[in-house]
Image 1 (cartoon, rainbow, N blue to C red):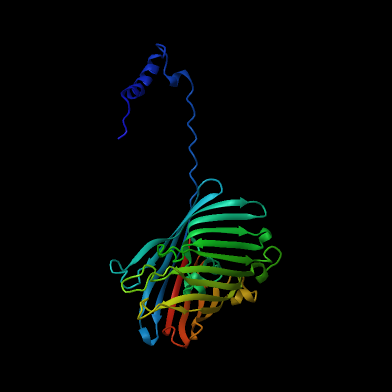
Image 2 (cartoon, rainbow, N blue to C red):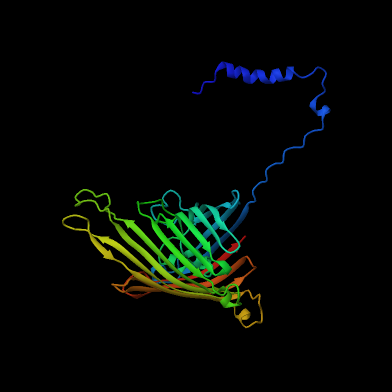
Length: 393
């Protein structure tokens, strides 16, 4: 316990009384002797930028695996708070409303829960006329998925790399973004835990990634060329062995990391009449078989796979020039996912639908989505009709 000497305590109480005793007799109160001092200016409250997006759907399955299964689902609700934190510094927090769907983890609560998706501090360390650069620390965007979502409407479904399970859309770590002069593009790099924002850190390894995006005609062209974006990205990851701590009957511990690398290229453009994107990506990944015992030794398994995808959002009336504000759009997407090139396990994913914009901030879509095995047995067939809704605010 902190002990304050009696003399100090007494002084703290006596000083105000002594100062009061030195005031001349009959002196009027301060309020009468001099004009009142103006109140100190209150510090300005930082401006809070609040925005969000919510999307929901009704779905009806027609495949044999779950024929006539149907449900209403609030798929996501993102609430974003941005606030400055001094010069060149700001904070962003985005909450993520999601439904508990994994058996076992939903034993306590089977409804919707809220978690953090983004929560980071951002600092501009270069803020010039030609060059701009900032760093982020916290829960932040991974290398590519959010960039892809600038072209593909996330409220219809996950972007191709996320749906194929290449990596999560957010993770804990540090990142930097460098904007190239004359709107030529950007460089984005990250150092993250690896498991994604839905999991805590699970091992000692970290994942490093980088993306280069070029927009060569952003400042001197119109139409599709103005928004044309060419990206190349690479992701160097590692995952701990499931035998890292050894165990009863095992021949020892395994400290080496399993390879978890990805890379891809992406070409896209977004205009009012037409938005499209094409991409190719590869996943180079190691797995493990066996029990790490003498009878069943540990064996490394190569599970390299590939992804090819193309999507488009077309406004027919705007394309022919009869209506620049046409609320009607046609949507299509095709993914070819090879989960293991050695075994030639592959499947196709299709999306086809129509979109109607109620306003500039709200839209409705009727679409059909199908997952169909092509070779091997990588995934069960699934056919689903959707009614999607989205609102931004």
